[in-house]
Length: 222
Image (cartoon, rainbow, N blue to C red; front, side, top):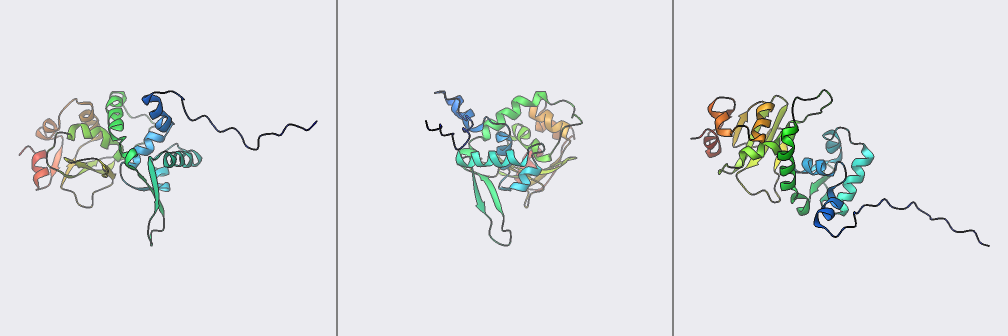
């Protein structure tokens, strides 16, 4: 009697909740650990694999590669090759990936009250404060790029205009900033939690505003 043939490959990991539900379908795409944090990083613009790995402390190379592959297949990110002399590949958000901005913004707002004192094990990057700060900047009417200086570093954020398909924020100083502000991380989080307003913090001197254009004037309340 012929011996039963064994499967040639291991059964693929179950990747769907198999529920006819929009929430379940969304979690099929972004419910895995690290996926939404990769989106957070790519909201800052195209990133190389090594840059993503450096700004996602704790993720293994295997998991990061797996998540990026899944996100490509799911239409969340695309990968392209930079022309010489860079000769490197970068990952960037596709339109469906950019559509997660309101989700990340809502999660940042929901999670802000849970941030107390920084724990000894907590990693930190300056641009991680960008999403919480967006809440305080939402009322600005003048469009431009705002450079933000914290003790932890610098980042820049686009304000007063449409978000769709655009770089929402970026790590480091801006190439061309329309205004600059300096504040501490605790105040940045307080603004994100709605504990004070931008106008109040500028008025009492906790935020220093630098710049001469319309955006800087609006920040100063002029």
